[in-house]
Each structure stands twice: as structure tokens, then as C-alpha cells.
Amino acid sequence: MTKYIINGAKPLHGEVEISGAKNAAVAIIAAALMVDGVCRIENLPQISDVSTLLNILKQMGADIRVVNKRTIDIDCSHVGTSRATFDMMRRIRASYYLIGALLGRFGSADVAMPGGCNFGGVRPIDQHIKGFKAFGADIEVKNGIVSAETGGRLRGSQITLDVVSVGATINLMLGATLAEGNTTIVNAAREPHIVDLANFLNSMGADIRGAGTNAIKVRGVRRLRGGFYSIIPDQIEAGTYMAAVAGAGGRVVIKDVIPKHLECISDKLREMGLKILELEDSIVVERMNPLLSTHIKTMPYPGFPTDMQPQISTVLCLAEGMSTVSEGVWDNRFRYVDELAKMGSSIRVIGRTAMIEGTPYLTGAPIKAGDLRAGAALVIAGLCARGETTIEGVNYIERGYEKMVKKLSDLGADIQMRYIPDEPSILIKDAG
Ligand code: EPU
Image (cartoon, rainbow, N blue to C red; front, side):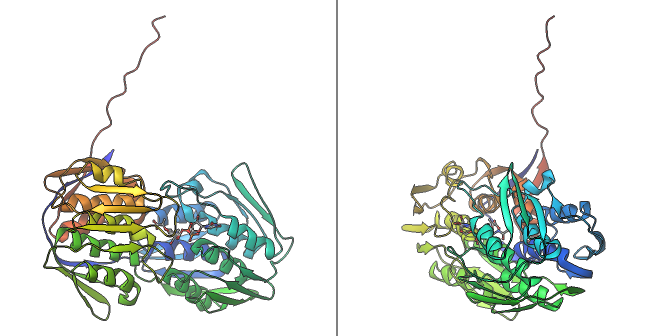
């Protein structure tokens, strides 16, 4: 088993480069299935969710060529199947984007139900299904497989989402791209990666307007052709390093970012007493004073992102006074607080709200990550804590953070990745 070992209470200094956005990359790779020709995708993050999805496409017959460590060419022209029911589909959430992409391309899809981070609650896909039905697909979920059939092209339609869902917005945008006629997605999500996917599809010949607003209009086209595209920087990876500086102290230049995407995070950190300077494509984060408590509610973009909730809650464990953090997107995303309690934090969760009483310091402990963002939060806790913290479950972290150990070490953190052999199993031999 691989663990991270952190000796904390050391401020961070220097520069860190932010990788391409995970949640844009997984949508764009799935979208490449609909493209007739070679797509060159640049600024891909080197994370396991991306390699899992690329492996899935490869198994389906895609031709994938690595140009350099951040750039690949994908050619899905020879993919001849609309079935994607491999076991590895259950490892990542974004495998559900294959439903929209395959339906768009073949008019049918058999796709294993997605897996991905389980942070405690259910992760329904009813809004995706409702949308595909409105597009004329017969769709059912049976034995862990989503099967959809149209008998031709999908038909564009107007769909009003009952909840603001990133995944449903993306999936329906994918389906609508090659559909017959026009689609409007009302109450659409507005996250930066939705805009990035629309830009990718448009650069390949799609006709999508309004991405980034809550009404996305898609005029269906007959085919997409190959081209080049570079993925936007990861808002949440950048936010995680900002939170790390807030917790551990110091001054760090966070490079290769779009500062506008970070405003919701920067504003909260300023309320907490940090100095944030926005430059053209970088942001400087500096903590000079003790942290101040605050109140946060997570919301769809442009609100404070749920994917930063565990990291910011961890930092607030060290802010003087009482803070509250309310989860406005997921039913339950506070399982990690039990791990923070082992480090001396004082957090009480009632329903969707955490009440956090600041303490002067955390202490190192052996702890375990249960999902991606919880894992990032525990790394931040380790960086802030006095003494040694060991973190298990780092495979979750590596699903979404490229070279986190190296990036933090370069900032002066004392963090190492260590392979620790599992306890030998005791074999009980049959006496007979
Ligand atoms: N929802 C429904 N029905 C649906 C879809 C969603 O009720 O059909 C509800 C969910 O239960 C949730 C809310 O709508 O309460 C929002 O869910 P959404 O569909 O937006 O989430 P998602 O698309 O499954 C993506 C990110 C998550 C991020 C959420 C919210 C990807 C691959 N995942 O998930 O990212 O938390 O949007 O911003 O893009 C992460 O990166 O760590 C992560 C979990």
C-alpha cells in the first residue's frame, strides 16, 4: 500500500504550476468519440481518471497516440461498437459521458453505470435519463448497465433540468451535438469545464451557444471533424493549493490559472485574512496574519465549489472562533471529519452543515482518505499539523491531482510517498 508521510507545520514558499482540468479532460475525451478524424488534445492532466478513460476508449477501438506527456492524438474513426460495459467503467464517474457520446454517434449505447468517488450519499442520474428520453431514446437501467436506443439520430428538444447538474448538462450537450434539430438546455450548470467542452465541440464543428449561462442552445450538426484543443487549467487543483497556503502559511505563486475561475475561492480566503493578488494567468496567495473564521455555503458555479468544501473546512479548523460550512450540492460530504477529529479538530455536523470551532493547532495522526477531495483535505491537514501524519487511500488523491507530492515538496513541504507492504496474511491450512 502506498501512503503519504507528512511532517507538518512548515510554511509553503515558491511557485506551483497548475495542470489541465480533470473534469474538463474527462468530458472532452468522451466527446472525442463523436469526432470523425484526429483530435489533438493538449494540457491533459497526468492523473489516473484520465488514463482509465483513455484505456476504455482504446478497448473500444480508438487509436491513441501519445505526442508528449501532456498531449495526445485520439482518433475514434474506427470505433465500431456502442457497448462500453467494462469493469473499469465503474472506477470513474465520467464514464457516464459515454452514454451521450455513443448515442450521438451510433444512436444506441450500452454503458456500465458509473462509479467514482463515493462521499457518502447517492449520486443519481435521473436528469440524464430524462433528457435522453426527451431526445427520443428508449432507455433503461438493468443489472448495472444503462441501455439506450433511438433507431436513428437523436431528436433535439427543450429540456428543463430539475436540479442544476454538471453531469446532465454535459451529457445532454454531447447528445444534442449530433442530434437532428435544435436543443435548449434550461437550468443548465455553468461550470468552467462546461464552457471548455462547448469550446472543444465548437472547434470540431459543433454549433453550441450560451455555455456558461443557464440556457445552452445547440443546433445539431451531421458530423464533427478533427482539430486541436488545449484544456483549461484546473480550478479545483488551484483552489487546493490556495487552501494549502491558507492552512500552512507562507507565500506561493500559483501559475497557469484563470483567476476569474478562482474568484469564488479568492473572495472567501480574503475574508479569512489572506492576501490574494490576481495577475494575468497566475495568482499570489500569502498568509501573514492568523486565520479568521467565516461562513460558507457550497453552490453550483459561480458559487463556492463543493469540490473545495473539504479543503476549506480543514483550513477553518485553525481559524479563531466558530465557522459554519453548509453543503448545498451533495446530501452528504462530511465523512472526512472523523479523520480530522483524530488530529484534534473540533467539528460538529448537523445535517448538511458543519460547525467548526477553531483550535490553535492540529496534531499529526494516521488517517485515511475516503475520496478524492477528502484526500486533498487530509493532505492539507497534515501540512498544518505538528508532528507526523500518515495518509492511506492515496489512490483516490491520484485520481485527480497530478504529482501532488512533488508539487508540495517543491514548495518546501516535508511530504513523501512511501510504499508500505501489506501485513502478511495468515494462511490457516486444513489440518486434514
Ligand atoms: N443530481 C440529481 N440527478 C441527476 C444528476 C445530479 O439529482 O441526474 C443531483 C446530485 O445528487 C447532486 C447535484 O444534482 O446533489 C449535483 O450533481 P452533478 O450532476 O452536478 O454532479 P456530477 O456531474 O456527478 C460533477 C463533478 C463532481 C462535482 C459535481 C458538482 C465530474 C466528473 N464530477 O459531478 O466532481 O462535485 O459535478 O460540482 O465532473 C470531484 O471532482 O471530486 C467531483 C466529485
